[in-house]
Image 1 (tube, rainbow, N blue to C red):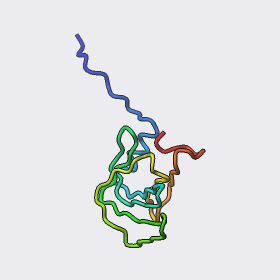
Image 2 (spheres, helix red, strand yellow):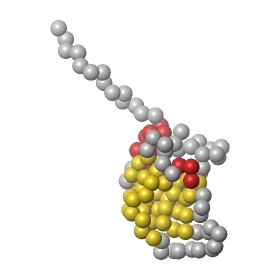
Image 3 (cartoon, helix red, strand yellow):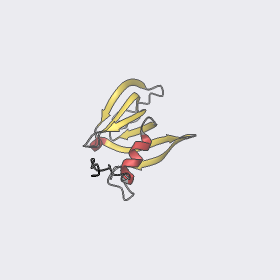
Image 4 (cartoon, rainbow, N blue to C red):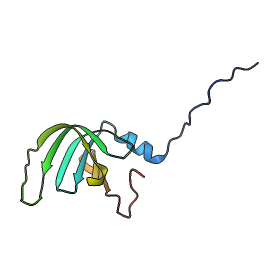
Length: 112
């Protein structure tokens, strides 16, 4: 008799899941459609692809009145609705790169 156990979990994950996991605990900058920018540590997404940031700061650039707050405002933990997001940028050595523009662009979407 041989022991039969539960099946092994799949070893490979889709590239989109791997890309999301690589962002965990990384600093990201999220720009939303009203001109605000949130900079914080990427903590994950939910099923609707809203983005969760922790230790986040809010910067206001634009809007109806020109307002630039270079110091930002600490907001702590924030859930940014996917429908408001214009771009997401991950911070790599030397600055923010790896920009992922909004879902309407022709480029590959990081959450597809």
